[in-house]
Image (cartoon, rainbow, N blue to C red):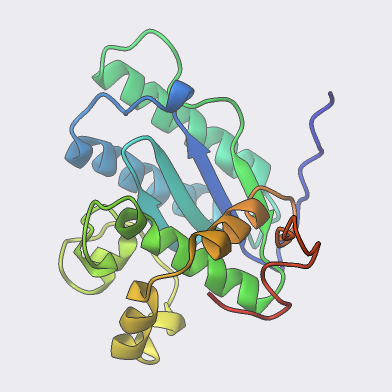
Length: 212
């Protein structure tokens, strides 16, 4: 089957995620992996004008929300994926490439889609039972935004968080049903966000404009 052509645009953010081959871990201390990703995001911003909204690094995958004013997501991510994979492979003395094929990229062309991706990504460590609260997870830009860790990733202004920090953190930490999380996950595997349908009712699990 032919791969779908990359949609190049500058108007809306992309949600981007990729996982390691066979779901393997990065085979390096997470502090070291975080440093590699942070440095490469910094370079992506300087070289390709990638506007970074949020980033979360997990033990075998990552979540990124970013905008490309130059409509160059393909060039930007090609370098980013190659450089991070090469550096991690060399540091970990691995023979094969780090990531399992291409990355998923979804255009978030509605405010609710952006907010659902924003929460889904930051909530991921809580869902994985790594931490109790989203702000406690060390390897996310949220941790740095709150002043809990030095952050070299150049982020765009986070109006979601800083318009009302306490309320935003309460919302991010508020549990979500597995069904709704799966609906968001489904949507973030499409070129444009699209909610999953319930098998029993054939209705969308997430209504239009609904925020988890």
